Amino acid sequence: MASTDTWQQHSDSENSFFLPLLGEELLPRKSRESSVQSVHWRNLVGFWLLGLCNNFSYVVMLSAAHDILRNQRTPENNSHVDPEPTPTPHNGTSRYDCNPVSTAAVLLADILPTFIIKILAPLGLHLLPYSPRIILCGACAAGSFLLVAFSQGVMTSLSGVVLASISCGLGEITFLALTAFYPSEVVSWWSSGTGGAGVLGALSYLGLTMVGLSPENTLISMLGIPVLLLATYFLLLKSPDSLASQRDGVLETSAQQPLIAGENSKPPDSNFKLSLSFSDRWNVFKGLLKYIVPLALVYFAEYFINQGLFELLFFRNTSLSHAQQYRWYQMLYQVGVFVSRSSLRCCHFHFIWLLAVLQFLNLGFLMVEVWFSFLPSIYLVFLIILYEGSLGGAAYVNTFYHVAIETQDEHREFAMATACIADTLGISLSGALALPLHDFLCQSH
Figure 1 (cartoon, one colour):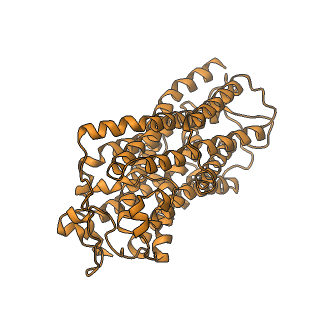
Figure 2 (cartoon, rainbow, N blue to C red):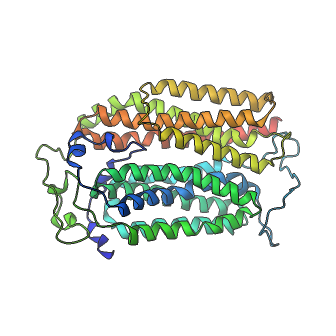
């Protein structure tokens, strides 16, 4: 599939489809009506696998955050986990069994590179062809697993997490841009794959460590995921039926060529507007604030809980170790997110602000629990975390749904690309503020 390189001059402005699990109904009306061609099963399965593989390392690194910070490798064999580990708190004066560094440090290492890539991508990412980009994604994902697995220090482990973030951020932009060459159905399959990565990534890490595999060997066992990513792109995906984007007519001829010569591209829409003025962009941005602000707040509260409070929600009256409790929290959160992101066809929710309020109530309740430890059972926290994940997934999918249907066709690309920064911004801010909270609580208790 070397001819994939014929796409190398295609502008990454095509990555305007920063879509969650929305499916075909979010695309412009004209695109939906014209997308009547059948989609080959290989392309549907291919994009699902690409979504799964692309987000897998990001999820695994968050699931492994507690182990990454707690585990200082020693030369002896660590191939298996002691079935009854002896608690060795890093802070003997703290009832939280604190790590020296908050898991928010892993969150920042896992999200900041993605945030930077999203900001800088429009400036020059289009100069790099698709095939090298995807090879780089696979190499970074594999490097992240290896670097964290063989690390003997926290900083080296965090460097591995950064590689996972680069792989995920670069892959998201690249594969979403790639969907412009295929019928619109592949977008929902890609999105479903990214949601599945949350559940499968967290569940596989939890399951493999529970059966006795060490965190290090668990990460090594996941090296097949980057291989699957490359195999899916280069071997499974079929060439597109046509260049589906409305902007193909104004691109350079060499950038219009599909994978296999002889395929016809669709005529451009003469009414399509290539660029927006600064005034247009500012007006669109102001209109988006009613969605950007609440989505950023939802994700701020959500990830403040995940990476600031999860490791402090430590129950001693259970058979689960501290590390196992953290892994269960992450897995249940991902289940809640996946279910709610898959529910758009069942119900729509317009008031994103209400979801932000509910998520902050979750944050406040769990903060009180961390401080006073009044809940009698960890299973109550499990239910709250499922609910927390469902709120976050619902906010994400409904935000992009309403942005897509409420913006004009010529504004949709800019609107979707701008709105997708909201969750990343909220996550980044939560990680930065969770670090001092961790130090304060661990030193005061």
